Length: 344
Image (tube, rainbow, N blue to C red; front, side, top):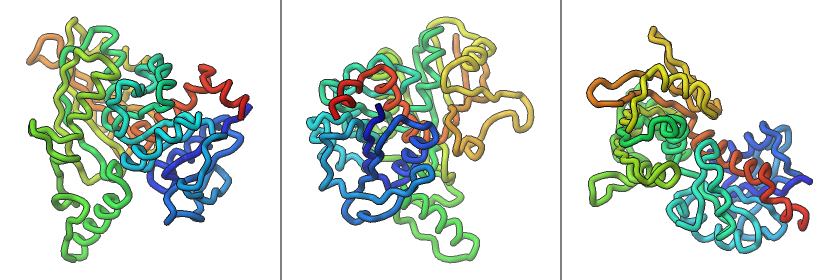
């Protein structure tokens, strides 16, 4: 029996990507509904070779819907996800609204699939921050082998992580540079075209930004609370795909060669690591792809049991849309929705 899926925030970057991936992966859905705010009512969005007309979230009855994929922002999720969950529909939430709730599992299927069973407490499953998702996919198999003590990560995050308006600002500013027009910074704190901004999300009392704190808190929740992690998150003038420079210190000895071999066999990972010109992956090549790409794997001679590596992934896919669809597939494959579907 097929399922009924609602995609909330279907007109946004991630919502459109969710619809595309549901169709690509032939998710067993008899019905897919596109939902958004009132101002988007009637807008058309693509779902495979079909076109869906967007309906309003306010008027939708979720009582006969199996899964709601929520990609409409934290405030919308805070308001709607508990209501939807109480109607018996499982919410998979892309926002940060419930990631740190102890009664809501935070899931990357390649990393902690077994934790999904906790969803029944609130009928909500959280999707991690895009920068964390690709990081833990790469860390998990190495942690299983040699136990990670400490991670130092610097991110190079694309503007699509901040939504369509930020993508448009990069485009407009880049155009302005070439035609010598004035450059305005509206969406960013400083000019983003041909520049880097070491500031994503709000500053905290510690001096970290919220984005940096998220990486630490989410890695601990999904992988191991004993891992120490520090991050510096930087917005770069790239449209799609996040990149990360990752330094890892292990409890046990692990050579770069062994780490490379482990990662080659790990789910979700694709190693491209040749010590030659172009023998690594850049964000441009990762865009539109599902894998978490890993390059530049090498020993860190400054610490005992240290490894450096370069991690790149499409933030709209593995960092958001793909991971939510994989969570939905996990619910189906483990039979966690069978009774719900039979009753619909």
